[in-house]
Length: 429
Image (cartoon, rainbow, N blue to C red; front, top):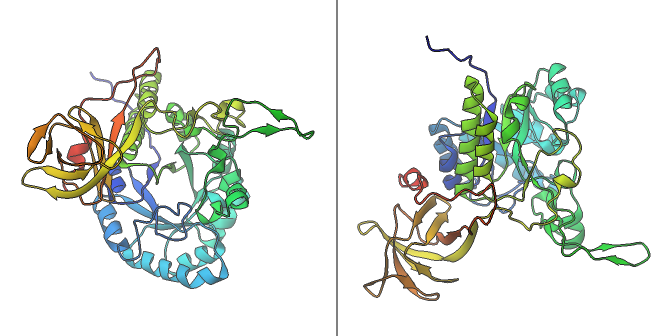
């Protein structure tokens, strides 16, 4: 008789998105998505969801069977209050499932409108009494501080009844719960209002008090590695939290599809009791092909030391590189082709490319190119080319070449597949 595996409850998988392309990319993997409008967001560059299209976005998310959480989590100033009230009214009308907030003005406005409230990690909730405080206000969930270890999370869970959510993947900040002032001090761009210039990702030089300068060979002294807990999900499930969050609203739809897919596969295996180290390591190798700054386990197993900082790498430690090629000028559905202006560089048959926009994401190989009505094997920078495409694209979509260098002894190397299923996922738009 076949052995029946015991089913283990697993937390809700919450994925960050900024537009319809990212929403579609994770719809088969996520349980919920979190996003923001073009204001009051810690990702100020995420401008594609506005009050005018919020209803349509939420309707699409709910139609996919996902819960929709709207982040309103920046610093709120007196002059912002009327606009905050309008945002909350729009959120209630659109049918969002919860507001992610930490400012009391936003919390009160959301609760007064009958909306559920999830307390943002910006509140830096690091103990059970703090979690209970927000529960007394009427909050439904607390997104815990990222500076907690597993034992501390477990203790908070044991002494509180409110829902708890934690991060499992994505960018980490040098400052406690993202409360950073370095960008505002150096450049006048406030991280706490969503406009961080990320000076922690720059190369820095170390100066001594006596004026001496330490030569570090262009090291990235402040650049924290990305969080990746794909190998440790069973331990996190054991803490009893109700939700796992994946950060990455400003990354591309290919990243969102890959990361959400890896974590869904892992959680499904955890649910049926089959998750094993070899599967976890395989998923981590797949994640290493996506944009990342190197991986660490953050604070979950103690305060990170040098292993938590990416001294050697710049913004991307992945062997895969995306190079801008050009922009879509027009789409011809009967010919399954697009007119592309090659602004940055040329293209050749056989190149692997990605085409992306607010509602577009396609990865494919270049199978055909036409210049002035004649098929060609390559086309140079500066010209216009007809490009065969495997799905609908739109004017102003961006075209990128996707390149991966030879392995050269890297044990984690994994060759990109020749074709991708992402094409089929996006052609129904």
